[in-house]
Every structure is written in structure tokens, then in C-alpha cells.
Image 1 (tube, helix red, strand yellow):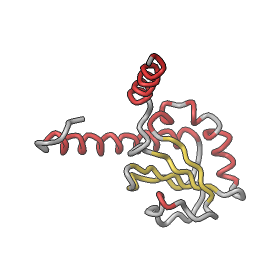
Image 2 (cartoon, rainbow, N blue to C red; image 1 turned 180 degrees about the vertical axis):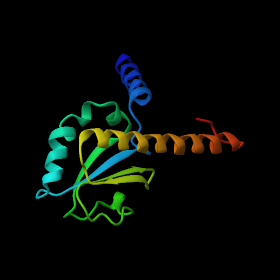
Image 3 (cartoon, rainbow, N blue to C red; image 1 turned 90 degrees about the horizontal axis):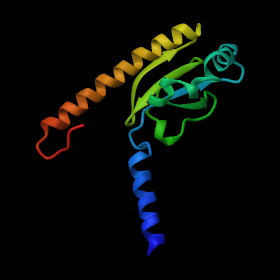
Image 4 (tube, one colour; image 1 turned 30 degrees about the vertical axis):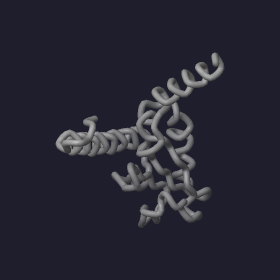
Length: 137
């Protein structure tokens, strides 16, 4: 009995504290192994991205431009140049950055894409609040 209660407590804690995978926003990074600009991004930003505030909002997903995208990203079209960074949420493209000049410009553009995500979330929350049988954000 005590073992069962312990398992239920652990399950409850994980449910409350685990990040939601469904609907999580991602930063999809299309790269090429022969791209010197991609190597520059990897050194200047990619090596520390996971430790940033932005990474808490947008999980980084690396995909070679030479591979077919996985089924869950088949809606991303027109990726020709590397590096290309595509922000996706709920099966839709939110925005993209093509190319990389320097880390300062990358972080500035990331900030704008995150603001766009916030606008989309606020809009969705308002729609939810306006619906009579839904729970507001």
C-alpha cells in the first residue's frame, strides 16, 4: 500500500512539474556540415544555447538540410540556405531567420521571434477565455 502511494505521489509531482511536450515551441536549426557560417554559429551560440533563457522557451532541434525533415516538421517549406532557424509551435511556423552574421544580431532576432510567440499565446488565451466551456490560460 505504501509503495502504491509513493508511486502516486511521484506521478503527481511529475505531472505538475514536467514541461509539456505537446504544443512546446521549438527552434529548428537547419545546418550543413560543409557550411562555415554554421560552424561559426555552433561555436558562438550553439555551444551555449542550452544554458540560455531562450532555450527555456524554445528547445533547439538540429536538422541537416541534406536530410528529409521528420513527419512532424513536414509543413516547413522553402529551406534553401544554411543556417536557417525556424520557430515552430503547434505544427505551424511562427517565423524564421536565414543566415547568421554575429551573435548579437542572432539574439536580437531571437528576441523578436519570442515576442511573436507571446502575441500568439496571448491571442490564443483570449480566444479560450471567450469560449464558454473552456479554461482560460
